Image (cartoon, rainbow, N blue to C red; front, side, top):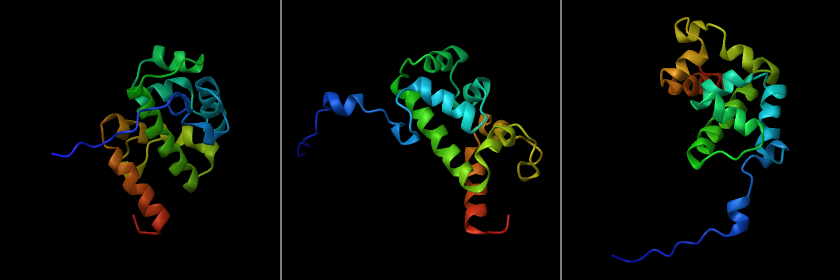
Length: 133
């Protein structure tokens, strides 16, 4: 079996802040941005990422998340971007907590917590593509 040469991560590559596209420089700024732009209170970020309130509080203080935690933040960030394409950004936090007939009366947050994120992605696809829901 041939050996695949892998690039070793450089210090610069390892230090790159994955959320710089948001215009922030660290995790503290990212948490502030989520709170201000998307109206996501810290408890909602806890629920969206599935990590403890303590972990989210540490991020808000500027501590870097683990690789697994950062992956959850990337997924949440992707979702927020998609939601911002179909609604006002400041409505995202309220929408996440509001019962929705598209989800049989469940809130989008409940749908996510049940592990049914695909329902939200499907809804976003339908809205963006003009498909009847």
